[in-house]
Image 1 (cartoon, rainbow, N blue to C red):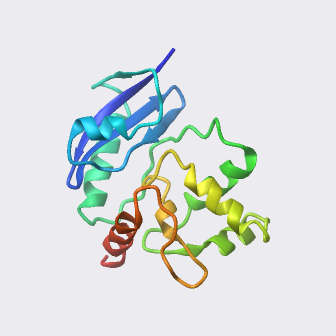
Image 2 (tube, one colour):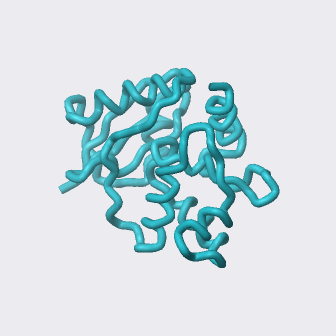
Length: 165
């Protein structure tokens, strides 16, 4: 069976959330229109839903977050489909606090893989649930903004949004 999706209107544009039986499977970055938001989704075989039980809470949390409120997302995430290493990186990244940043090397050390900072970047690159799993909070060892699926302007905007709180 395919997955369900919900189109969300946020202060930064339209975003699409894809749901599995276990929770949030994928979420797209905000886009200017619904068609672009749907095209941004990688999951195929999806069916629109307006009444998914987690959609309302996610919409409210996304709206509040993108308006600058320090939200901690509490939507269940479907971690299946990741390797154990990728899941470890993403689960750890999910715990980086609002307004905080860590380097790729720090994430690698904190998951007990101190030489795997490049692999950490690879795992973050395939994060299906950006913003909710805040991979934008991981930066280069020299403090630079590197690698982000939504683009470096989006990463900078999200970090600035959090810094101003």
